Image 1 (spheres, each protein chain N blue to C red):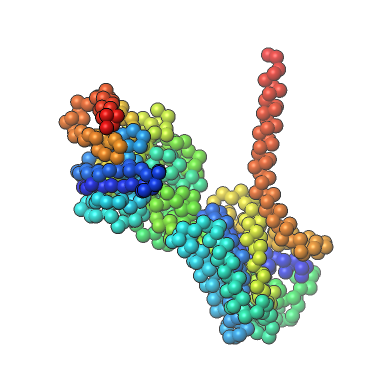
Image 2: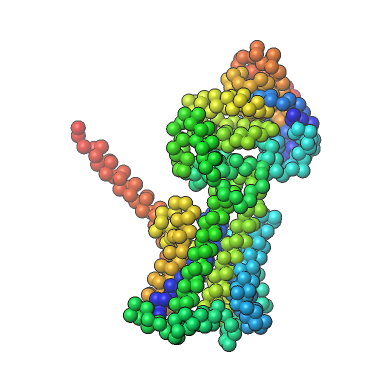
Length: 258
Length: 319
């Protein structure tokens, strides 16, 4: 489904601030896989997601989604195939606009936006049903500004928005990192349900080893812009937080020895 | 009475300017100073077509609107394709337009004497509707041309406001509103933010130029200086409108902006009739906008401080 072949990216090349967040990433991700991308700060995991989403052009390598080379696709064109949830709850929703307004945008993700009415009774009813399932008491607040909601509520809604039309690929960029533990658990539970229901191909970035062990069916561990380990389903079942910690510890030590 | 009707008509015409500023300033969060140039551009294009080419006033007015679309598009291209700071893009286009306007007009002032304009059209229409050059309105004798013009402009601006309101409820309009609110989100949902911004700036300046075109026809001349400081005028109208309606939702904001423009023009007319020096007008408008931007924050800060002091007193009380 998703293929990355030797993807490289350097920022501020040939200056004192040169950073190389992606140093040859090659990955092959099958349809319906729920991949956890694990790494510390500066490991390149968020840059990897942004490269997929098209926030910048990669320096070399190839990104293929569903057999299509995404190289020349702009960010908004890729959005037709890719759903995204960001780390910052403010990033995924337009705070001054109502919940319904926000979802009317999500209902047109990647489609041509013309002069048809954005809101419809059908959308409102469908949304009311989906929001009721969240059990956050939002079903009667569809017309209030989304900016009045809590971070957890906004992330839950952003997740629903990103998957309102089924994306070929779902990118979750540490989408619970800014939430309190209780909200984070709620959003993660919802994430798991949404992904399972729609059989979504997902990349979820996290720095939490606990989350990495608990969720998904494959772990891609990144360090210094490279894929350090790639644990498949069977291996992942055996993995524990301590094992992951040890992997990172070894990687750091190797770096020292270099 | 004639003075009030005049101010009312001008207020309604200039509410198109205010609506343009509302779009760029409130929806896209850009203080777009192109407005100062595009207002004159609309007046200049309309004026030249009327005086030099004898074009029908309706087409000349539409051409004025188109001129504004063009000016806004140029500013939009500078901002999106060339990634120039929004404020600077506006300054560049406004500055360039000053020369363009002089070239279009051929001189700094064009009087619309002896040519057909919307104004002369209203004179004919008024005479045939009311049967005389003057008519009686609630005990006041007023020019029927003025009343006709006022009615025509009210109908025009109401229809434009209605179309705008409807537009901002469509898929495209909603995406445009969102791209001012959160561009990152709109991109993630497949919206072409740059294109929306370009379109919004074109529309905003189109409306402003239309205001310029109508204003010139109403006062019977176009002047190369008529646009100077008009963005502040538009901002003042938008701010008054928000104070009146609370700025919840696009519909209320549009209505508020129109009322704000009319109110502001009436206030100015009254102040002028009481002997305010017209030279001070721009300064007073600028100070007004400054105060409107600063006072709400200041009031909040002062009241928080007062509350804190009160709380302190309460806490030191023995139990």
